[in-house]
Image 1: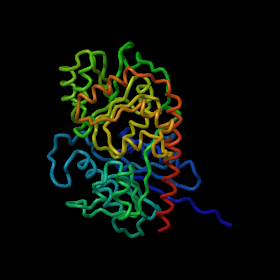
Image 2: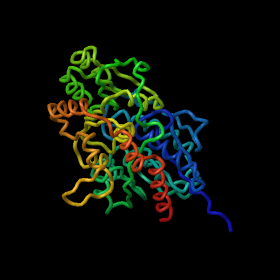
Image 3: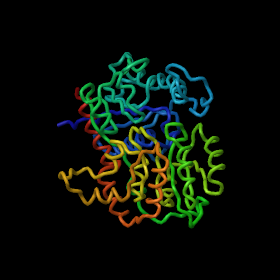
Image 4: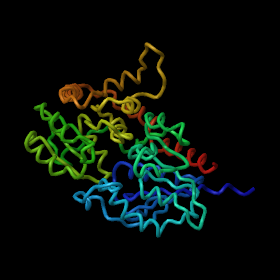
Length: 386
């Protein structure tokens, strides 16, 4: 009997192998896990360089990086630097993408990448899966270019998106993940990052864009005289952020722009993670901090509550041991209220971190990339069989 041929899956995103955060990190991790299975033949198309150690095939389609477009005009479908970058990626993608070579195409980039992957060619186009890594505006199809969105399967990265779309699109609720082998509790080497040895360090790991509310984070930390803020990230607000930190946190601030391989070591140097964004498609930083065992201060929302609790149900009126542990290490507040953020940071910085190892185990149980990729693989097979 002939063996079943592997499902041919193509992940497409402009920043793959060039940008090392967010959606790019997620796609590369999931693709790596799937490629190790004989059930899948995996290809990635992005604007970075090939990496010999990766188990999947990589095809380069060059683009102009988003940073080049930070000061460019914003209008219509080109409303931010990411859209301009995607527009420059599309012509190269058209040249290298061969739809007949794949059974499933995958992206989270809209509009140009999605349109191209859905376009008619000489060959039958593959089934298309869209992932809400960057939000769910496109599948809502309410106005402007979003009205042209289509897909065969929708992966929702949080329960709010899933409940909104499950009756419109073939949908699955699948979180993002982390690598439990690297994001784990350990004593960090602060000297490696030139960080003060005795300070209480608040880590903000975020793109420097308005939606992440990094300026508000500086103002909240400034009320705590013993706190030292470390910002790991880059983006168009870098100069404004540095000016605000120089004004409010003199001698208590450092910004780093690190390769992804160094991020676990930086988490291990911190005392707590602060994340101020009100609306996130998922928030990889939460599971990375959970993996290291860090206390977390974040905006209260259905998504953060879903991530920062154990998945097993608890009878009404009772609290599971996992939930008790998570509530002791997670402070969810209205981040519009800077006093509430400051008070939560004070409690997080002064609390005990004795349950870090158990929290790591709980995070690995729900959010390891291996488990996340298994869910992706099942959904790809279901969508390809439509």
